[in-house]
Length: 309
Length: 285
Image (cartoon, rainbow over all chains, first blue to last red; front, side, top):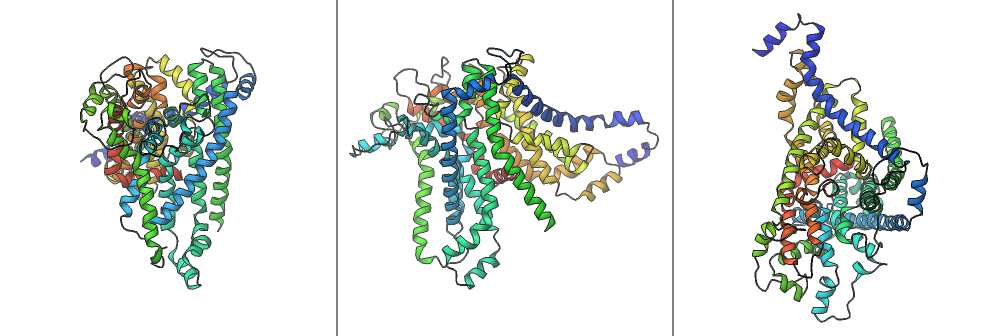
Protein backbone atom coordinates (compact mmCIF):
# COMPACT_ATOMS: atom_id res chain seq x y z
CA UNK A 1 0.00 0.00 0.00
CA UNK A 2 2.60 2.55 1.05
CA UNK A 3 4.84 1.61 -1.87
CA UNK A 4 2.08 2.43 -4.31
CA UNK A 5 1.47 5.76 -2.67
CA UNK A 6 5.12 6.74 -2.65
CA UNK A 7 5.61 5.85 -6.33
CA UNK A 8 2.38 7.53 -7.32
CA UNK A 9 3.23 10.81 -5.61
CA UNK A 10 6.84 10.93 -6.76
CA UNK A 11 6.71 12.66 -10.19
CA UNK A 12 4.63 15.63 -9.17
CA UNK A 13 6.89 16.73 -6.33
CA UNK A 14 8.63 20.09 -6.41
CA UNK A 15 12.19 20.65 -5.26
CA UNK A 16 11.08 22.41 -2.07
CA UNK A 17 8.66 19.75 -0.98
CA UNK A 18 11.36 17.17 -1.68
CA UNK A 19 13.66 19.04 0.66
CA UNK A 20 10.98 19.28 3.33
CA UNK A 21 10.27 15.59 2.98
CA UNK A 22 13.94 14.75 3.40
CA UNK A 23 14.49 17.15 6.28
CA UNK A 24 14.07 14.55 9.07
CA UNK A 25 16.67 12.22 7.59
CA UNK A 26 18.96 15.15 6.92
CA UNK A 27 18.71 16.19 10.57
CA UNK A 28 19.13 12.63 11.85
CA UNK A 29 22.31 12.20 9.82
CA UNK A 30 23.93 15.56 10.34
CA UNK A 31 23.01 16.75 13.82
CA UNK A 32 24.73 13.96 15.79
CA UNK A 33 27.73 13.76 13.46
CA UNK A 34 28.18 17.52 13.40
CA UNK A 35 27.81 17.84 17.17
CA UNK A 36 30.41 15.15 17.67
CA UNK A 37 32.86 16.50 15.09
CA UNK A 38 32.32 20.12 16.10
CA UNK A 39 32.87 19.45 19.79
CA UNK A 40 36.08 17.54 19.10
CA UNK A 41 37.57 20.27 16.93
CA UNK A 42 36.30 23.32 18.78
CA UNK A 43 37.08 21.93 22.24
CA UNK A 44 40.63 21.09 21.18
CA UNK A 45 41.18 24.57 19.74
CA UNK A 46 39.52 26.09 22.79
CA UNK A 47 41.80 24.27 25.23
CA UNK A 48 44.86 25.10 23.13
CA UNK A 49 43.79 28.75 23.09
CA UNK A 50 43.30 28.85 26.87
CA UNK A 51 46.80 27.43 27.25
CA UNK A 52 48.20 30.61 25.71
CA UNK A 53 46.18 32.98 27.88
CA UNK A 54 46.86 34.27 31.42
CA UNK A 55 43.65 32.55 32.66
CA UNK A 56 43.58 31.59 36.30
CA UNK A 57 40.23 31.26 38.05
CA UNK A 58 38.17 31.91 34.91
CA UNK A 59 39.18 31.92 31.24
CA UNK A 60 40.30 35.38 30.13
CA UNK A 61 41.63 36.62 26.81
CA UNK A 62 45.17 37.80 26.41
CA UNK A 63 48.37 36.28 25.17
CA UNK A 64 51.22 35.05 27.28
CA UNK A 65 52.95 33.00 24.61
CA UNK A 66 54.62 29.89 25.99
CA UNK A 67 54.63 31.17 29.54
CA UNK A 68 52.18 28.56 30.83
CA UNK A 69 54.08 25.77 29.11
CA UNK A 70 57.36 26.95 30.58
CA UNK A 71 56.01 27.11 34.09
CA UNK A 72 54.36 23.67 33.83
CA UNK A 73 57.53 22.14 32.40
CA UNK A 74 59.61 23.80 35.10
CA UNK A 75 57.37 22.62 37.95
CA UNK A 76 58.53 19.72 40.08
CA UNK A 77 55.01 18.32 39.90
CA UNK A 78 55.15 17.91 36.14
CA UNK A 79 58.73 16.64 36.12
CA UNK A 80 57.87 13.92 38.61
CA UNK A 81 54.70 13.15 36.68
CA UNK A 82 56.61 12.83 33.44
CA UNK A 83 59.31 10.58 34.92
CA UNK A 84 56.59 8.46 36.50
CA UNK A 85 54.77 8.23 33.19
CA UNK A 86 57.93 6.97 31.47
CA UNK A 87 58.52 4.34 34.14
CA UNK A 88 54.86 3.38 34.49
CA UNK A 89 54.24 3.34 30.72
CA UNK A 90 57.24 1.16 29.90
CA UNK A 91 56.94 -1.22 32.86
CA UNK A 92 53.19 -1.59 32.56
CA UNK A 93 53.19 -2.16 28.79
CA UNK A 94 56.08 -4.65 28.86
CA UNK A 95 54.71 -6.63 31.79
CA UNK A 96 51.14 -6.70 30.60
CA UNK A 97 52.30 -7.72 27.12
CA UNK A 98 54.36 -10.61 28.46
CA UNK A 99 51.63 -11.66 30.91
CA UNK A 100 49.00 -11.48 28.18
CA UNK A 101 51.13 -13.40 25.70
CA UNK A 102 52.01 -16.09 28.25
CA UNK A 103 48.35 -16.55 29.19
CA UNK A 104 47.31 -16.66 25.54
CA UNK A 105 49.92 -19.30 24.71
CA UNK A 106 48.91 -21.38 27.72
CA UNK A 107 45.22 -21.12 26.87
CA UNK A 108 46.01 -22.15 23.31
CA UNK A 109 47.22 -25.59 24.48
CA UNK A 110 43.77 -27.15 24.24
CA UNK A 111 43.38 -27.11 27.99
CA UNK A 112 40.25 -27.99 29.88
CA UNK A 113 38.20 -25.17 31.28
CA UNK A 114 39.49 -22.66 28.77
CA UNK A 115 36.24 -20.69 28.83
CA UNK A 116 36.23 -20.40 32.60
CA UNK A 117 39.87 -19.32 32.64
CA UNK A 118 39.29 -16.74 29.92
CA UNK A 119 36.36 -15.36 31.87
CA UNK A 120 38.57 -15.07 34.96
CA UNK A 121 41.43 -13.33 33.15
CA UNK A 122 39.09 -10.84 31.52
CA UNK A 123 36.66 -9.93 34.28
CA UNK A 124 38.80 -7.11 35.72
CA UNK A 125 38.15 -5.21 32.48
CA UNK A 126 34.47 -5.00 33.36
CA UNK A 127 35.24 -3.32 36.68
CA UNK A 128 35.91 0.40 37.02
CA UNK A 129 39.39 1.69 37.74
CA UNK A 130 37.96 3.26 40.86
CA UNK A 131 36.99 -0.16 42.18
CA UNK A 132 40.32 -1.69 41.14
CA UNK A 133 42.23 1.14 42.78
CA UNK A 134 40.21 0.97 45.99
CA UNK A 135 40.59 -2.79 46.34
CA UNK A 136 44.34 -2.77 45.63
CA UNK A 137 44.81 0.11 48.05
CA UNK A 138 43.50 -2.23 50.75
CA UNK A 139 45.56 -5.22 49.68
CA UNK A 140 48.78 -3.23 49.38
CA UNK A 141 48.28 -1.17 52.52
CA UNK A 142 50.88 -2.57 54.94
CA UNK A 143 48.65 -1.83 57.95
CA UNK A 144 45.66 -3.87 56.80
CA UNK A 145 46.67 -5.80 53.67
CA UNK A 146 49.12 -8.47 52.60
CA UNK A 147 51.88 -7.37 54.97
CA UNK A 148 49.55 -7.44 57.97
CA UNK A 149 48.33 -10.90 56.97
CA UNK A 150 51.90 -12.20 56.80
CA UNK A 151 52.63 -10.71 60.21
CA UNK A 152 49.49 -12.26 61.68
CA UNK A 153 50.55 -15.61 60.28
CA UNK A 154 53.85 -15.29 62.14
CA UNK A 155 56.14 -14.09 59.35
CA UNK A 156 57.04 -10.91 61.19
CA UNK A 157 60.05 -9.97 59.07
CA UNK A 158 57.90 -9.75 55.94
CA UNK A 159 57.93 -6.30 54.32
CA UNK A 160 55.67 -5.16 51.52
CA UNK A 161 55.17 -1.47 52.03
CA UNK A 162 55.41 -0.19 48.43
CA UNK A 163 52.17 1.76 48.79
CA UNK A 164 53.69 4.06 51.40
CA UNK A 165 57.25 3.94 50.09
CA UNK A 166 58.14 6.94 47.93
CA UNK A 167 60.53 5.00 45.72
CA UNK A 168 58.30 2.01 45.14
CA UNK A 169 54.78 3.46 45.19
CA UNK A 170 54.62 3.84 41.40
CA UNK A 171 55.00 0.05 41.16
CA UNK A 172 51.72 -0.45 43.03
CA UNK A 173 50.03 1.33 40.12
CA UNK A 174 51.88 -0.95 37.71
CA UNK A 175 50.62 -4.01 39.63
CA UNK A 176 46.99 -2.87 39.70
CA UNK A 177 47.08 -1.79 36.05
CA UNK A 178 48.48 -5.16 34.98
CA UNK A 179 45.84 -6.96 36.99
CA UNK A 180 43.15 -4.89 35.34
CA UNK A 181 44.22 -4.97 31.71
CA UNK A 182 46.59 -7.81 30.87
CA UNK A 183 43.45 -9.77 29.98
CA UNK A 184 42.99 -7.39 27.10
CA UNK A 185 46.43 -8.32 25.69
CA UNK A 186 45.56 -11.98 26.25
CA UNK A 187 42.29 -11.69 24.32
CA UNK A 188 43.97 -10.08 21.31
CA UNK A 189 46.93 -12.49 21.33
CA UNK A 190 44.64 -15.48 21.66
CA UNK A 191 42.64 -14.33 18.64
CA UNK A 192 45.95 -13.94 16.79
CA UNK A 193 47.18 -17.40 17.76
CA UNK A 194 43.91 -18.93 16.66
CA UNK A 195 44.24 -17.39 13.23
CA UNK A 196 47.75 -18.69 12.54
CA UNK A 197 47.69 -20.90 9.46
CA UNK A 198 47.92 -24.49 10.71
CA UNK A 199 49.84 -25.49 7.56
CA UNK A 200 52.78 -23.34 8.62
CA UNK A 201 52.80 -25.04 12.00
CA UNK A 202 52.66 -28.49 10.44
CA UNK A 203 55.44 -27.59 8.03
CA UNK A 204 57.63 -26.48 10.92
CA UNK A 205 56.94 -29.70 12.79
CA UNK A 206 57.76 -31.80 9.75
CA UNK A 207 61.05 -29.92 9.57
CA UNK A 208 61.70 -31.23 13.07
CA UNK A 209 61.10 -28.06 15.07
CA UNK A 210 60.13 -28.64 18.68
CA UNK A 211 57.18 -26.81 20.23
CA UNK A 212 59.26 -24.01 21.74
CA UNK A 213 61.20 -23.51 18.54
CA UNK A 214 57.97 -23.54 16.54
CA UNK A 215 56.56 -20.81 18.73
CA UNK A 216 59.66 -18.69 18.69
CA UNK A 217 60.47 -18.97 15.02
CA UNK A 218 57.14 -19.55 13.31
CA UNK A 219 54.12 -18.49 15.36
CA UNK A 220 55.25 -15.47 17.36
CA UNK A 221 56.57 -13.54 14.33
CA UNK A 222 53.05 -13.56 12.88
CA UNK A 223 51.78 -11.81 16.02
CA UNK A 224 53.78 -8.63 15.78
CA UNK A 225 51.08 -6.50 14.14
CA UNK A 226 48.81 -7.41 17.08
CA UNK A 227 51.67 -6.65 19.46
CA UNK A 228 51.98 -3.15 18.03
CA UNK A 229 48.23 -2.57 18.44
CA UNK A 230 48.29 -3.80 22.04
CA UNK A 231 51.27 -1.57 22.84
CA UNK A 232 49.57 1.48 21.39
CA UNK A 233 46.25 0.88 23.17
CA UNK A 234 47.99 0.23 26.49
CA UNK A 235 50.20 3.30 26.10
CA UNK A 236 47.12 5.36 25.36
CA UNK A 237 45.68 4.14 28.64
CA UNK A 238 48.92 4.80 30.53
CA UNK A 239 49.21 8.35 29.24
CA UNK A 240 45.72 9.31 30.33
CA UNK A 241 45.61 7.19 33.51
CA UNK A 242 43.68 9.08 36.18
CA UNK A 243 40.97 7.11 38.00
CA UNK A 244 43.26 4.26 38.98
CA UNK A 245 45.88 6.53 40.54
CA UNK A 246 43.24 8.71 42.16
CA UNK A 247 41.73 5.67 43.89
CA UNK A 248 44.96 3.82 44.66
CA UNK A 249 47.50 6.42 45.82
CA UNK A 250 45.96 9.79 44.93
CA UNK A 251 49.41 10.77 43.68
CA UNK A 252 51.04 10.04 47.02
CA UNK A 253 52.89 9.49 49.23
CA UNK A 254 53.56 13.20 48.81
CA UNK A 255 53.65 13.58 45.04
CA UNK A 256 55.61 10.38 44.43
CA UNK A 257 53.02 8.82 42.12
CA UNK A 258 51.95 11.98 40.31
CA UNK A 259 50.98 11.43 36.67
CA UNK A 260 50.19 13.99 33.93
CA UNK A 261 46.41 13.53 34.14
CA UNK A 262 46.52 14.28 37.88
CA UNK A 263 48.62 17.38 37.28
CA UNK A 264 46.04 18.63 34.77
CA UNK A 265 43.18 18.07 37.20
CA UNK A 266 45.09 19.63 40.07
CA UNK A 267 45.96 22.77 38.09
CA UNK A 268 42.49 23.21 36.60
CA UNK A 269 40.22 22.45 39.50
CA UNK A 270 42.22 22.61 42.70
CA UNK A 271 44.67 25.42 42.11
CA UNK A 272 42.47 27.38 39.67
CA UNK A 273 45.32 27.79 37.21
CA UNK A 274 43.26 27.27 34.05
CA UNK A 275 45.97 28.47 31.66
CA UNK A 276 48.56 26.14 33.12
CA UNK A 277 46.08 23.29 33.38
CA UNK A 278 45.23 23.70 29.70
CA UNK A 279 48.95 23.77 28.87
CA UNK A 280 49.44 20.52 30.78
CA UNK A 281 46.48 18.98 28.90
CA UNK A 282 48.04 20.02 25.59
CA UNK A 283 51.36 18.51 26.70
CA UNK A 284 49.48 15.27 27.41
CA UNK A 285 48.04 15.42 23.91
CA UNK A 286 51.53 15.92 22.48
CA UNK A 287 52.83 12.88 24.37
CA UNK A 288 49.90 10.90 23.00
CA UNK A 289 50.58 12.12 19.47
CA UNK A 290 54.21 11.02 19.82
CA UNK A 291 52.79 7.51 20.16
CA UNK A 292 49.83 7.71 17.79
CA UNK A 293 51.35 9.48 14.78
CA UNK A 294 54.10 6.88 14.19
CA UNK A 295 51.42 4.22 14.66
CA UNK A 296 49.14 5.86 12.09
CA UNK A 297 52.07 6.15 9.66
CA UNK A 298 52.95 2.51 10.21
CA UNK A 299 49.37 1.44 9.53
CA UNK A 300 49.22 3.57 6.42
CA UNK A 301 52.41 2.04 5.02
CA UNK A 302 51.18 -1.46 5.83
CA UNK A 303 47.85 -0.87 4.13
CA UNK A 304 49.55 0.52 1.03
CA UNK A 305 51.82 -2.52 0.91
CA UNK A 306 48.90 -4.88 1.35
CA UNK A 307 47.06 -3.11 -1.44
CA UNK A 308 50.03 -3.46 -3.79
CA UNK A 309 50.76 -7.07 -2.94
CA UNK B 1 49.95 -25.09 18.81
CA UNK B 2 47.23 -27.61 18.62
CA UNK B 3 48.96 -30.89 19.16
CA UNK B 4 49.66 -32.94 22.20
CA UNK B 5 53.43 -33.04 21.97
CA UNK B 6 53.51 -31.00 25.17
CA UNK B 7 52.06 -33.95 27.10
CA UNK B 8 54.85 -34.31 29.70
CA UNK B 9 54.59 -30.67 30.64
CA UNK B 10 50.82 -30.41 30.67
CA UNK B 11 50.74 -30.60 34.44
CA UNK B 12 53.00 -27.57 34.51
CA UNK B 13 50.65 -25.69 32.16
CA UNK B 14 47.70 -26.40 34.42
CA UNK B 15 49.70 -25.38 37.46
CA UNK B 16 50.66 -22.03 35.92
CA UNK B 17 47.18 -21.15 34.66
CA UNK B 18 45.68 -22.11 38.01
CA UNK B 19 48.11 -19.86 39.84
CA UNK B 20 47.32 -17.00 37.49
CA UNK B 21 43.59 -17.59 37.85
CA UNK B 22 43.97 -17.51 41.63
CA UNK B 23 45.87 -14.22 41.41
CA UNK B 24 43.19 -12.68 39.21
CA UNK B 25 40.38 -13.89 41.41
CA UNK B 26 42.04 -13.07 44.73
CA UNK B 27 41.05 -9.39 44.93
CA UNK B 28 37.41 -10.24 44.20
CA UNK B 29 37.38 -13.05 46.75
CA UNK B 30 38.99 -10.83 49.37
CA UNK B 31 36.42 -8.09 48.87
CA UNK B 32 33.48 -10.49 48.87
CA UNK B 33 34.72 -12.06 52.11
CA UNK B 34 35.32 -8.66 53.66
CA UNK B 35 31.86 -7.54 52.74
CA UNK B 36 30.66 -10.34 55.04
CA UNK B 37 32.93 -9.54 57.99
CA UNK B 38 32.30 -6.99 60.69
CA UNK B 39 34.32 -3.79 60.64
CA UNK B 40 35.80 -4.64 64.05
CA UNK B 41 36.89 -8.07 62.94
CA UNK B 42 38.73 -6.60 59.94
CA UNK B 43 40.34 -3.97 62.12
CA UNK B 44 41.62 -6.59 64.54
CA UNK B 45 43.19 -8.82 61.89
CA UNK B 46 43.62 -7.71 58.29
CA UNK B 47 41.65 -7.24 55.07
CA UNK B 48 42.39 -10.82 54.16
CA UNK B 49 40.53 -13.42 56.17
CA UNK B 50 37.60 -15.74 56.56
CA UNK B 51 34.48 -14.28 58.26
CA UNK B 52 34.19 -15.32 61.93
CA UNK B 53 30.66 -13.95 62.18
CA UNK B 54 28.75 -13.53 58.96
CA UNK B 55 27.86 -9.86 58.75
CA UNK B 56 25.21 -9.72 56.07
CA UNK B 57 24.10 -6.42 57.56
CA UNK B 58 27.02 -4.76 55.76
CA UNK B 59 25.02 -4.80 52.55
CA UNK B 60 21.96 -3.12 54.05
CA UNK B 61 24.24 -0.57 55.68
CA UNK B 62 26.16 0.05 52.43
CA UNK B 63 22.97 0.30 50.41
CA UNK B 64 21.06 2.77 52.53
CA UNK B 65 22.71 3.45 55.86
CA UNK B 66 26.24 4.74 56.10
CA UNK B 67 27.47 8.25 55.44
CA UNK B 68 29.19 9.55 52.34
CA UNK B 69 30.49 13.02 53.13
CA UNK B 70 27.62 14.62 55.08
CA UNK B 71 24.62 12.60 53.96
CA UNK B 72 23.81 9.24 55.42
CA UNK B 73 21.73 7.43 52.83
CA UNK B 74 24.21 4.78 51.73
CA UNK B 75 25.15 4.44 48.09
CA UNK B 76 21.58 3.99 46.91
CA UNK B 77 21.16 7.59 45.68
CA UNK B 78 24.48 7.39 43.84
CA UNK B 79 23.59 4.06 42.26
CA UNK B 80 20.37 5.67 41.11
CA UNK B 81 22.33 8.63 39.70
CA UNK B 82 24.62 6.28 37.81
CA UNK B 83 21.63 4.42 36.39
CA UNK B 84 19.91 7.67 35.39
CA UNK B 85 23.08 8.78 33.61
CA UNK B 86 24.10 5.47 32.09
CA UNK B 87 20.82 4.12 30.75
CA UNK B 88 19.66 7.18 28.76
CA UNK B 89 23.18 7.96 27.52
CA UNK B 90 23.63 4.36 26.39
CA UNK B 91 20.31 4.32 24.54
CA UNK B 92 20.79 7.71 22.89
CA UNK B 93 24.39 7.16 21.82
CA UNK B 94 23.62 3.68 20.49
CA UNK B 95 20.56 4.71 18.47
CA UNK B 96 22.14 7.85 17.06
CA UNK B 97 25.34 5.91 16.36
CA UNK B 98 23.43 3.20 14.53
CA UNK B 99 21.64 5.71 12.30
CA UNK B 100 24.84 7.65 11.63
CA UNK B 101 26.82 4.46 11.06
CA UNK B 102 24.22 3.34 8.56
CA UNK B 103 24.30 6.74 6.86
CA UNK B 104 28.08 6.83 6.42
CA UNK B 105 28.42 3.21 5.35
CA UNK B 106 25.40 2.48 3.17
CA UNK B 107 23.38 5.61 2.44
CA UNK B 108 26.44 7.66 1.55
CA UNK B 109 26.27 11.42 1.20
CA UNK B 110 28.63 14.21 0.31
CA UNK B 111 31.36 14.59 2.92
CA UNK B 112 30.57 11.30 4.66
CA UNK B 113 34.15 10.08 4.83
CA UNK B 114 35.38 13.39 6.14
CA UNK B 115 32.90 13.68 8.93
CA UNK B 116 33.33 10.03 9.84
CA UNK B 117 37.10 10.50 10.04
CA UNK B 118 36.74 13.50 12.35
CA UNK B 119 34.20 11.75 14.60
CA UNK B 120 36.50 8.76 15.11
CA UNK B 121 39.28 11.11 16.28
CA UNK B 122 37.21 11.18 19.46
CA UNK B 123 38.58 7.72 20.26
CA UNK B 124 41.99 9.28 20.80
CA UNK B 125 41.41 12.80 22.11
CA UNK B 126 42.13 12.74 25.86
CA UNK B 127 39.31 13.76 28.18
CA UNK B 128 41.62 16.38 29.65
CA UNK B 129 41.44 18.34 26.39
CA UNK B 130 37.66 18.62 26.79
CA UNK B 131 37.33 19.30 30.50
CA UNK B 132 37.46 23.09 30.47
CA UNK B 133 35.25 23.57 27.39
CA UNK B 134 32.64 21.18 28.81
CA UNK B 135 32.71 23.03 32.12
CA UNK B 136 32.03 26.31 30.36
CA UNK B 137 29.40 24.89 28.01
CA UNK B 138 27.54 23.08 30.80
CA UNK B 139 27.55 26.21 32.92
CA UNK B 140 26.27 28.35 30.05
CA UNK B 141 23.40 26.01 29.22
CA UNK B 142 22.59 25.52 32.90
CA UNK B 143 23.42 21.83 33.09
CA UNK B 144 26.40 21.94 35.41
CA UNK B 145 25.93 19.66 38.41
CA UNK B 146 22.98 17.88 36.79
CA UNK B 147 22.52 14.33 35.63
CA UNK B 148 21.26 15.64 32.26
CA UNK B 149 24.61 17.33 31.75
CA UNK B 150 26.43 14.02 32.10
CA UNK B 151 23.88 12.31 29.84
CA UNK B 152 24.60 14.96 27.20
CA UNK B 153 28.36 14.56 27.51
CA UNK B 154 28.30 10.78 27.37
CA UNK B 155 25.88 10.77 24.45
CA UNK B 156 28.01 13.10 22.34
CA UNK B 157 31.32 11.53 23.29
CA UNK B 158 29.97 8.01 22.97
CA UNK B 159 29.10 8.68 19.34
CA UNK B 160 32.76 8.26 18.38
CA UNK B 161 32.58 4.65 19.51
CA UNK B 162 29.03 3.81 18.48
CA UNK B 163 29.40 5.25 14.97
CA UNK B 164 32.65 3.33 14.54
CA UNK B 165 31.19 0.04 15.75
CA UNK B 166 28.04 0.30 13.64
CA UNK B 167 29.75 1.63 10.54
CA UNK B 168 32.30 -1.21 10.56
CA UNK B 169 29.48 -3.69 10.93
CA UNK B 170 27.24 -2.19 8.26
CA UNK B 171 29.92 -1.93 5.55
CA UNK B 172 29.65 -5.70 5.24
CA UNK B 173 25.99 -5.44 4.20
CA UNK B 174 25.76 -5.64 0.39
CA UNK B 175 25.03 -2.29 -1.24
CA UNK B 176 22.74 -4.00 -3.76
CA UNK B 177 20.26 -4.59 -0.97
CA UNK B 178 20.01 -0.87 -0.30
CA UNK B 179 19.97 0.01 -3.98
CA UNK B 180 17.12 -2.40 -4.66
CA UNK B 181 15.12 -0.99 -1.74
CA UNK B 182 15.67 2.55 -2.99
CA UNK B 183 14.48 1.64 -6.46
CA UNK B 184 11.36 0.28 -4.82
CA UNK B 185 10.85 3.71 -3.34
CA UNK B 186 11.95 3.06 0.23
CA UNK B 187 13.42 6.09 1.97
CA UNK B 188 16.20 6.55 4.49
CA UNK B 189 14.20 5.64 7.61
CA UNK B 190 12.22 2.88 5.95
CA UNK B 191 15.38 1.10 4.85
CA UNK B 192 16.89 1.56 8.28
CA UNK B 193 13.79 0.25 10.02
CA UNK B 194 12.98 -2.62 7.69
CA UNK B 195 16.39 -3.81 6.45
CA UNK B 196 19.20 -2.52 8.63
CA UNK B 197 17.73 -2.78 12.11
CA UNK B 198 16.65 -6.43 11.80
CA UNK B 199 20.26 -7.28 10.84
CA UNK B 200 21.75 -5.24 13.66
CA UNK B 201 21.13 -7.30 16.80
CA UNK B 202 24.74 -8.49 17.27
CA UNK B 203 26.33 -5.06 16.83
CA UNK B 204 23.69 -3.33 18.92
CA UNK B 205 24.36 -5.74 21.79
CA UNK B 206 28.11 -5.12 21.49
CA UNK B 207 27.55 -1.36 21.42
CA UNK B 208 25.11 -1.30 24.32
CA UNK B 209 27.42 -3.41 26.49
CA UNK B 210 30.42 -1.28 25.60
CA UNK B 211 28.64 2.01 26.26
CA UNK B 212 26.98 0.85 29.45
CA UNK B 213 30.24 -0.46 30.90
CA UNK B 214 32.19 2.66 29.99
CA UNK B 215 29.65 5.17 31.18
CA UNK B 216 28.92 3.29 34.39
CA UNK B 217 32.63 3.07 35.17
CA UNK B 218 33.46 6.64 34.18
CA UNK B 219 34.90 8.79 36.93
CA UNK B 220 36.62 11.95 35.72
CA UNK B 221 33.57 13.72 34.28
CA UNK B 222 31.42 12.57 37.15
CA UNK B 223 33.75 14.04 39.74
CA UNK B 224 34.42 17.22 37.74
CA UNK B 225 30.91 18.21 36.74
CA UNK B 226 28.85 17.09 39.72
CA UNK B 227 29.09 17.46 43.46
CA UNK B 228 27.38 16.04 46.52
CA UNK B 229 24.06 14.37 45.86
CA UNK B 230 24.40 14.53 42.07
CA UNK B 231 27.50 12.37 41.83
CA UNK B 232 27.65 8.99 40.12
CA UNK B 233 28.63 5.98 42.19
CA UNK B 234 32.29 5.94 41.11
CA UNK B 235 32.75 9.42 42.57
CA UNK B 236 30.83 8.43 45.71
CA UNK B 237 33.18 5.47 46.25
CA UNK B 238 36.15 7.83 46.29
CA UNK B 239 34.36 10.19 48.67
CA UNK B 240 33.54 7.21 50.85
CA UNK B 241 37.12 5.97 51.03
CA UNK B 242 38.32 9.30 52.39
CA UNK B 243 38.59 8.60 56.10
CA UNK B 244 36.20 10.74 58.13
CA UNK B 245 37.30 9.53 61.53
CA UNK B 246 39.30 6.61 62.84
CA UNK B 247 36.22 4.41 62.83
CA UNK B 248 36.99 1.30 60.80
CA UNK B 249 34.41 0.70 58.08
CA UNK B 250 36.08 -1.60 55.60
CA UNK B 251 33.37 -4.22 55.89
CA UNK B 252 30.64 -1.82 54.82
CA UNK B 253 32.98 -0.25 52.28
CA UNK B 254 33.65 -3.66 50.72
CA UNK B 255 29.92 -4.24 50.42
CA UNK B 256 29.59 -0.83 48.74
CA UNK B 257 32.38 -1.71 46.29
CA UNK B 258 30.64 -4.99 45.41
CA UNK B 259 27.29 -3.26 44.89
CA UNK B 260 28.88 -0.58 42.70
CA UNK B 261 30.73 -3.13 40.58
CA UNK B 262 27.81 -5.53 40.27
CA UNK B 263 25.95 -4.09 37.25
CA UNK B 264 28.94 -4.22 34.91
CA UNK B 265 30.14 -7.53 36.32
CA UNK B 266 26.74 -9.11 35.67
CA UNK B 267 26.67 -7.72 32.16
CA UNK B 268 30.12 -9.17 31.60
CA UNK B 269 29.12 -12.58 32.94
CA UNK B 270 25.99 -12.80 30.81
CA UNK B 271 27.25 -11.05 27.71
CA UNK B 272 30.93 -12.01 27.83
CA UNK B 273 31.22 -12.87 24.16
CA UNK B 274 29.84 -9.50 23.10
CA UNK B 275 31.93 -7.74 25.70
CA UNK B 276 35.12 -9.22 24.25
CA UNK B 277 34.01 -8.40 20.72
CA UNK B 278 33.61 -4.77 21.76
CA UNK B 279 37.09 -4.77 23.27
CA UNK B 280 38.72 -6.04 20.12
CA UNK B 281 36.57 -3.87 17.85
CA UNK B 282 37.54 -0.84 19.89
CA UNK B 283 41.19 -1.81 19.69
CA UNK B 284 41.54 -2.45 16.00
CA UNK B 285 39.92 0.88 15.15
